[in-house]
Every structure is written in structure tokens, then in C-alpha cells.
Image (cartoon, rainbow, N blue to C red; front, side, top):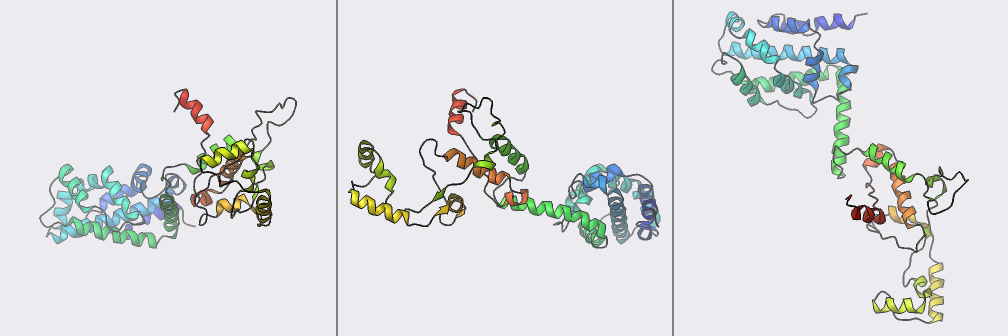
Length: 346
């Protein structure tokens, strides 16, 4: 059985064994590199992963750096420098360059799922502004950047363990994109909001009742609420014509009620209404195609607020994945809002 440390000692060795710059890699290979790994992969792998998989990430890091040193050296040879000139003139500066925090971040970006090329102009600028001597005339940073990304993609393909880690980032990326499509800000904490709704509305509100001596303080709304059944009204709402005459008159004056109808007509309307199929209010609410907007009306105490709380809890009790694809309930209690507004709290 090969120990992780032994495996790491050979990572990239075949790549660098003939390099003029191999001493840079050998120094890195002997270091622990925890901080280097964290800086390198910070933008492409979730924060908790490096602690769980240090061997896999360090192995990928060393191989990527070996390839990066190879591309730099190849380009220096293309500029007609000798091996001795590369070592004597550029070795110290190149070692400092690959330890630069900004360079680490740039090189790590090649491991991002959608990365096709890293920023060659930024690599060039960092070298020009921070390191000397200047690269020789004709040194091609664009080729360096493109070639490096190609070899990184090969490293990923050849490492099932690394590919598995990156799948976690793919999943997070997909979930974030889906939430953006759904109109949910990526930094919105759905789970926390679900917890808040459950804490606020799970317990049935019996504050208007005298519950002295009764164990009602833990009565769950979810356990006792039954969504109402409804019927579709095609002509008139019979209940409106059961209101007192004075109320009917005011509604007619406001054009909210048709002209007065006879008792016989009302009886016929009631019969038609009673023959309509019954369905749950939940079915109506979920039918977004036919009912994109709904207004819940009812007498005081008829269950309007309780229905809305129930719907909010229904969403709050769904799984986070399901919640991503559903509208987020925003339940505003107007009496609470007005009280807070009058108190200067909103």
C-alpha cells in the first residue's frame, strides 16, 4: 500500500525531471502547502473541502505547478535563451512569481468548471509591476495562459478523486443559477427563512381565548388546520343576497352588486351553485395557469389568516431543493405592520 506522502513525492516528478527550473518545484513539493492549497483553490472548491481532501488537492496543485513551470520554460527557450541563462536570470523571480497571492488565485481559476482561459494580461501585468528582469522580447503570455488551462483540464480528467470534488462545485453552481432564474438572490438563505416561518407560525395562535389550565400552548397549526373546500361561482354569489337589505343597497350604490333579484331567482342560483363540483382551496391556489392572482375574502374569524399561515408553513416544510422551484411566501400581517409603523419601527 502506498502512503499519501509517498505518492505525493512522485507527483509531477516525471514532468520536471529535465527542467532547468526543477529546483523551484522540488522546494514546493517538500513544503506542507496548506495555505497555498487554500489560496489556490479558493474560487473553485467550497471552503470545507480542502480540509477534507488535502492529499487530492495538494497532488493536483503540484502537478499544475509543474505544468506551469514547463510552459514558462518552453517559452523562454523559444526566446533563444539557454538553460544556464534561464536558471541564472529568471529562477529566483519565477519562484517568487508562483508564490504571489494574486498569481495563485489566477492559476487556481483554471480548475473552475467554466474556465476556458485565464487572464494572460493580468499575469503579464503582475510580472512587469512586481518582478525583474523583464521577460525577453517575444515572450507570449497568451500562449502560457491557454496552454496551462489545457493541461489543467487534463489533470482533472485523469483524477477521479479531483473530478468528484469538483462535482460538488458544479452542483452548487447549478443550484445558484436555478435560484437566480427563479428570482432568488444567490446569497438569500432559504433554509434560515424556512426555519423562521416555522418558528413564527407553527404554534396555533389562541391568544384571544382563555387557555388557563389547558396544554394548548404547543398545539400545532399543521396538526389541526383543514383547508376549506370551495365551489366555482358562474353567475352570482348567493351569499351576498343573504346580507341585510341595507348592506345590499350600499353594495348596489357602489356598483358591487347587481340589481335586486327575487327569492325564486335566488333559489335557482343557489341550486346551480350547490351542484358545482367541490375542490380543495389548495388545488385552486396551485393552479397558477388559471388563477395567477388570488384574493382571499371572508368574514372575521373565517380563517383567512390561518389559511395564509398554513400555505407559508407548507412551503417552509418542503425540502430546500423543492423550495428553490416554488414562489417564496412573504406573509405581511397588516395589523402588525401598522402597529410597528406607528411605533416608528418600519
